[in-house]
Figure 1 (tube, rainbow, N blue to C red):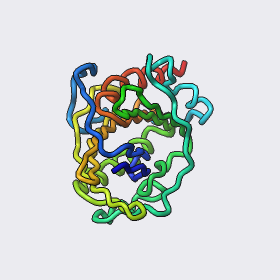
Figure 2: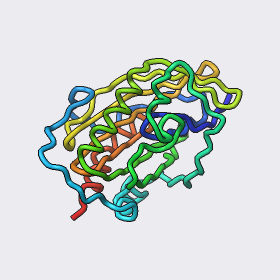
Figure 3: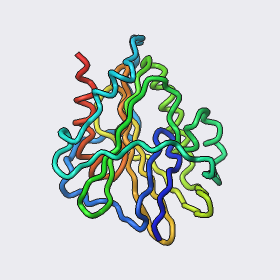
Length: 230
């Protein structure tokens, strides 16, 4: 069975493609020292000058950054009226569209998704947000705590039931604050594993989601490009 549906993942709308699928081979992924699932440096001063969506757009990774075999996916309009979450009431308290496949409540944002043509339907997506450091920290912390606080729930997309399992995962020591989670989607007896890492660097939030191997491979690259605002 092949299921194509945009489901809620708290911070990002990750498209579950081509179930059945399996987690990607991580043998070629770059190894990065990891910290606890969430760590932060003290916020000593807030940076009020948020980057505009246009500025964020130019800081996203593109095909030339990723290398051979990647193609950018066209952005699809949000269609989640028929998506219902079962077994995690806290998701409905997040506000905005976060619990139904939309974006977190940060007004300045830019996104890009890419398909990797290796025959495994692997994908990686990047989201950039900008706001004061305290707003990014508090908002992201709330969403990740809610998501990982529901270790198992179900998404009903039309007539298709998808079981979702979430767990915290270690994060690399990058930026000022880090969050990480692994999500396993099960439908028709098959599983798809999605990794999601969020890094706050000052007034910038970088989120990379998708195949675990691709997330590990491109996370540092995404943060380096996004942080090069000067």
